[in-house]
Amino acid sequence: MHKHISANINDLKNLWHTVFGDAPSVIDTYFNIFYSPELTAAEFIDGKLAAAAYVMPAGDLVNADSREKCAHIYAVAVYPEYRGRGLGVSVTNRAVKLAKDAGCSAVILHPANESLFGYYEKHCGFQTCFYASKNTLPTDASEVPEADIVTYMSVRERFLENIPHVALSYDILDFFTKCGGKLYASENGCAAVEIYDETSYFREVLGNSSPLGSIPTGMIHGSAPFKNGWMGLTLE
Image (cartoon, rainbow, N blue to C red; front, side):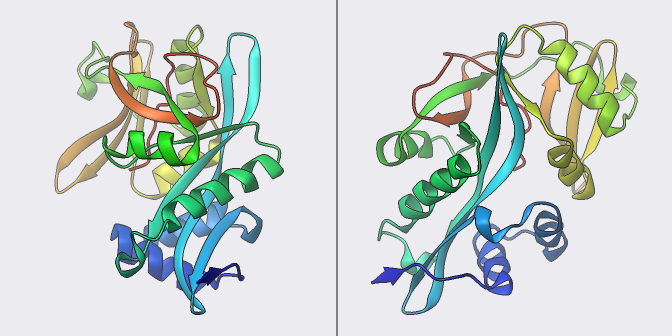
């Protein structure tokens, strides 16, 4: 039966790489920016690390005049041989508790695929409240200049001023760019883009039209304070 013990950093990195296949440089970047034992939930079976999840400080959840400290439950991983034992639920629930103990009253996550929305709602007490539309940037992306993090944050907040949203922290965007992401911003909109094998993947796009739509992108723990908000950058 599993029990709680302290996790070795190299074991955590090996689990992450096995489950997600991320390059060691990406994993190291996350650990350099965000890792803290107090913000890491881990489960063990027979003394071996079996599952882990991380609390990533995300910024603030903004809803009208309300601002709450926000945490993102990130990289929930279970070794394939230990799946089906409830460990994913266990580390997720423990990570939520760690986030709230750290003073984050808003706890969010981005399910890796659509089928997991129901899973997190049923087993972990999350509700879907973040949605997006497919196309939101009216300007050709090639015409939008590359921007630094501070400029991107400023433009992003302007386009989200009247929309419930996650106001991303500098560290989130720093992690994104250090992992190869590019930020673009102008008066007409902003975009966060990753490029793999010469193909561009838009992780967040904002323009003059509302970005909200019907595509579920994120969940919040407990009762949702709004029905449709903008989570934005999903860090896939």
